Image (cartoon, rainbow, N blue to C red):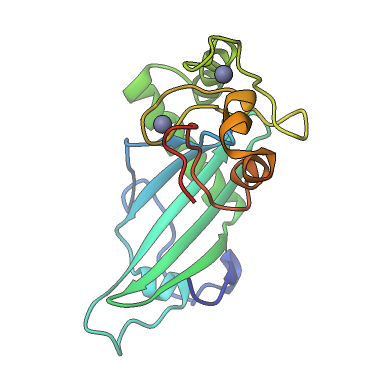
Length: 201
Ligand SMILES: [Zn+2]
Ligand SMILES: [Zn+2]
C-alpha cells in the first residue's frame, strides 16, 4: 500500500460527477467482518470519472483503475468510504469523506441492496449476525465460545477463516500460547482468525 490520502467531498476536482443512483452500483456480495460484526462492507462499482473525483492521475500508466468501498455501521449510522487506486504494480489506499448527500445516497443504496438480497434492513443483518455469535460452541472441546473481545464490547467471531471450525480461547492457547493469540485477535494486526489446527506463523 502506498501513501494514505484523505479527500473531502468539496475538494474533489470541480466538474467531477456527483454521485447518483445511476452511476453507482452496490455489489450484492457484501461482507460482515468476523472481527467487527456491526460493520457491513460493500464494494461499489463506479460509473463516473473516478480519476477526476479522487484526484488520481492514471495517464502515465498503461492500466489503472479505482476500486471504491464502503463500510456501514447501521447501529451508529457511521459510513466510511475508501478507495484503492491501482496500477499494474502499485496500489494506493485513500479515504474519501463524502458529503452529507453522498452519505445518505450510499446508505440508501446499501439498504436497498440488502432488502433485495435478504429481505431485511441493514440493522437486521447485523443483529442476526450478533445472534449467530451467541450460540457458538468450540469444535475442539465443546465449550461455549467466549464472544467478546478484549475491550468487552467488540464481538469476535471465533471461527477459523480457513476451515470454518469454531474454536475457543483455551484450545488455541493450549497449542500456540497466549502471546500469539493476542497478536491474532488484535484487529490492527491484519492476521486472519485461524483455529489451532490451521494456525501458522
Ligand atoms: Zn475449545
Ligand atoms: Zn481451521
